[in-house]
Image 1 (cartoon, helix red, strand yellow):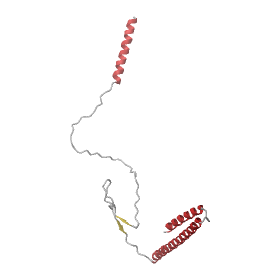
Image 2 (cartoon, helix red, strand yellow):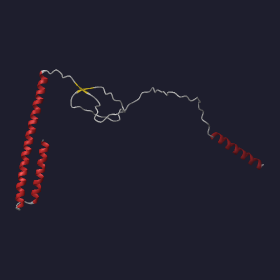
Image 3 (cartoon, rainbow, N blue to C red):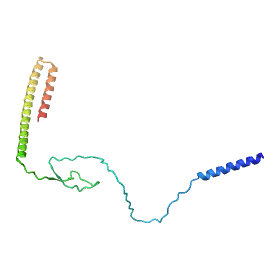
Image 4 (tube, rainbow, N blue to C red):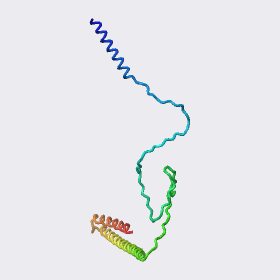
Length: 170
């Protein structure tokens, strides 16, 4: 009897292994078949989308005006120094008395600023000349041994600083 039980147990395990192998075996995927033809591929997507700005560029002009429509498209080739857009001048507004006074005040202010800048330049040039004269005198005194070499170095730096002052005033 033992032999019969052992045989039944072995047959059950084999049957279970076969069922498990059949259940886990890969199945072919069912596909739809159609003949191949050559033609245009056209598809549409009817969904809402969002655009994101990748690079932001600021274009500025020294004068006010109207920008003509830009005819270039994304990916168009552009030559160096070629105009990308045309700026048309705006028609000048009618100047009333108040606007005329404001413009005159701005012109007067600009002229005053130019005059002040001229005075600053002249003052910086006079200071530079004075520093150069002091440096020459101190160089002569240093040759005679009356002034320390450190004083000459500070005079050279003062001349450089005065030259920079003239450059910044101009």
